Amino acid sequence: MASSLIFLLFLIFTLSFSSPTLISAKSNATIIESTCKTTNNYKFCVSALKSDPRSPTADTKGLAAIMIGVGMTNATSTATYIAGNLTSAANDVVLKKVLQDCSEKYALAVDSLRQTIQDLDSEAYDYASMHVLAAEDYPNVCRNIFRRAKGLSYPVEIRRREQSLRRICGVVSGILDRLVE
Image (cartoon, rainbow, N blue to C red; front, side, top):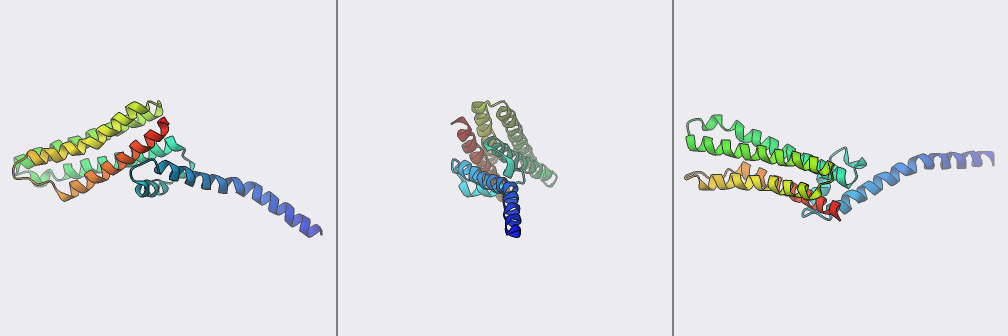
């Protein structure tokens, strides 16, 4: 009888400390899923957020900040990628100019996303949405620069990176819409 009582007390003690963690992890998974349902790319949103170690403790605003960071990383790496191709375009003045302009557009996308973080911190969600839309549009400007340059085609790798940034910004916009509700 005494051993049963000790076991029961041990079980109650163990559950009282482990249960909040289980509930918290489950409720956060629910927050990620319900947040991502408001976006235009549920699967990508869930995948991106669950892969970030900060997500388990984040609220909706924190999840928005995480996705904005993903966008900043994408835009920064794209600007760096494009700038890295400038040396191979040294003999082609037009291509070099187009690459410089595109690299600058992606740098501006990073700036817009950085401003989005500041807007998010101050809960200026309308401005945050505006800055995300700007960040999403800068790659379009890059594509148009290529389109206007005679004899140049839009590189597949830059197109892939543009689509990725658009997808990220679309998810951020959906999360910001949820914050306004």
